[in-house]
Length: 82
Image 1 (spheres, rainbow, N blue to C red):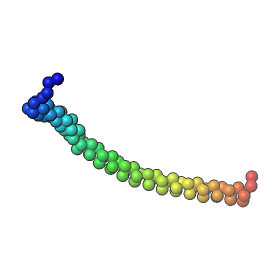
Image 2 (image 1 turned 90 degrees about the horizontal axis):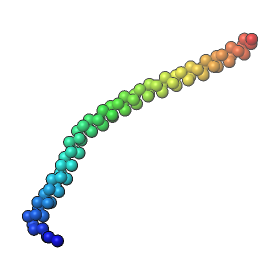
Image 3 (image 1 turned 180 degrees about the horizontal axis):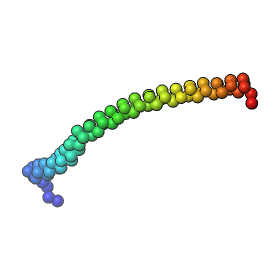
Image 4 (image 1 turned 45 degrees about the horizontal axis):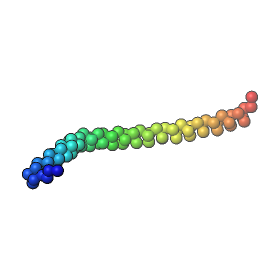
């Protein structure tokens, strides 16, 4: 087996590091796009939270109206038996 001299070791190490840096650079260049995507998602979630509060209020209001309507119908049924 042939041993490597210092220059050959440096050259191999340099190639390995260059390959690793290339991979790291590829991932890092996607970070701004990912960050923008996350910010967009946050805005969408905030909008959905607001919409859900409105939907919840509407459902609660409809539920109350339905309950009041049922009570009114029950009273009318008692007052005006058919």
